[in-house]
Image 1 (cartoon, helix red, strand yellow):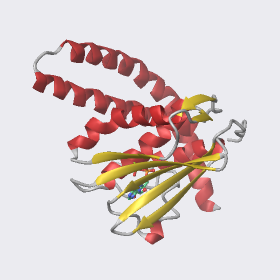
Image 2 (cartoon, rainbow, N blue to C red; image 1 turned 90 degrees about the vertical axis):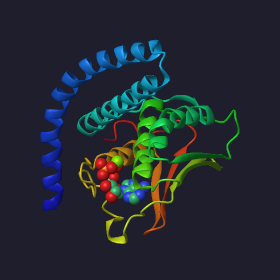
Image 3 (cartoon, rainbow, N blue to C red; image 1 turned 180 degrees about the vertical axis):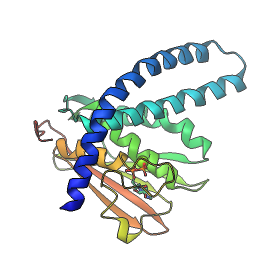
Image 4 (cartoon, protein in one colour; image 1 turned 45 degrees about the vertical axis):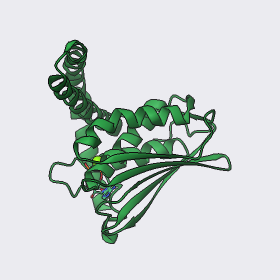
Length: 234
Ligand code: ADP
Ligand code: MG
């Protein structure tokens, strides 16, 4: 209980800060990203263009970090719309592929969902979840390893599994990784998974982890395909 109180105190303090700070960061960030985008499109020298691409990807990371803080402080009700699953996952993966390539890590698509399969969910929030889990997978991996994204239909549910061949999660940390601020990284925030659990929970879904210490980790995201999400549950 004591720990819960400390966490909720931290959250409300963070919440107040984040609301103000995120606003102040977002506006200049949007401007910077806009001009970087234009600059990128005008560059002719392929090497400089590639570097500017990295700048764009890193800026996306900052934007995502700010989003995690905002979601943590002021969780929002999902805005549910139809999403064409495979195309949506492709767009998330291709968006992160450059950054993974920097670490010499490759994404493998293993879709067992039909091209026309639809998920009713909040696309921005689900993208945030996939981004966080893929980011962790890349960070846990060694060069030359692969990260697999597998989809499967299980009755009325969609199962997305993100597997890596990286460090694994040691058994005593397995129950802690979803706690806000839990991190084993030097410059981690420990917010990515707690935000992701919250978002999936709000969609009436579930995240489970299979991890083999030293061998890799599977994150299983199960989501109802239709829109019977919980309203105002946060
Ligand atoms: P952060 O990435 O900022 O540390 P997260 O909430 O995203 O915060 O993750 C919390 C912790 O869970 C990580 O610090 C790491 O110890 C562990 N973790 C998450 N995903 C993986 C993974 N794929 N492989 C190994 N450890 C992981
Ligand atoms: Mg993370």
